[in-house]
Length: 284
Image 1 (tube, rainbow, N blue to C red):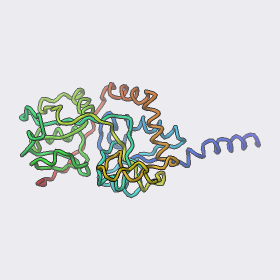
Image 2 (image 1 turned 120 degrees about the horizontal axis):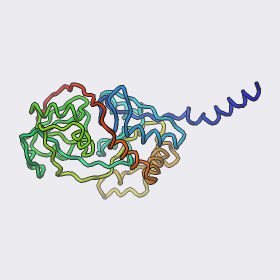
Image 3 (image 1 turned 180 degrees about the vertical axis):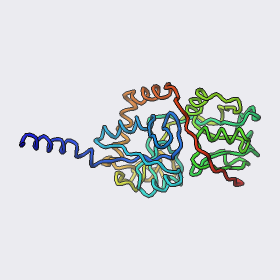
Image 4 (image 1 turned 90 degrees about the vertical axis):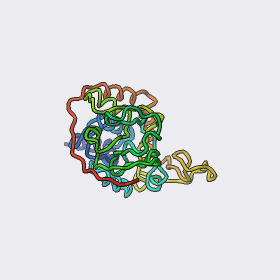
């Protein structure tokens, strides 16, 4: 009996840190394969990477799914810890801190079949951009365009809208579009690999998360533009947020993220779950 009790206490001591540390990832309800499946499944590359990173710092990964507008509010309020793929903006940096997530981001343009060639942003003038609610403002929106919004848009949803010519173009990650079209060929859309350069992908970590602590950034240069690398504050290295970022970096440097990326992008697509999108239009 005493041996059994000692063994149980040993397990509790060993697992106590893990059970007491939970990091919550938030994401919209629709799929972005192979990064994440549609609700109710959370399977995908994101989960594989961030579950491993959480485990490295003796935490467990929890996933919260909801419409993107709600997820962003939860993120800003600190009720979820991070969003896995989140583009930097000065407005967002008021509430969110940005870490590289180990992946790269290269946006390309998807159009309906009647738009045969896009070489620059100027070619998008007087056209209709389709984008999800809560999406970051793109530089293309400086053009003379219309913007139509859809709730929790995935690639399959966007293609349906483009096929009906209810919008002219959609901007999305190159790897995700290539993956989807390789598994779901479609003669009604055209891909335009122009206008955007590949760059590191970021995750957005809530500054109100219990795992985040900010300190003054002594290297901040006030005379230079605010950017992801030039902010008046930085993360305290003693925080769990910093440890989580370091764990992701360690997975990247070891080649584990590259291995996982190859595994998921090469996997056969079993099914593509779609959801109808509510479309509204505003003049930009």
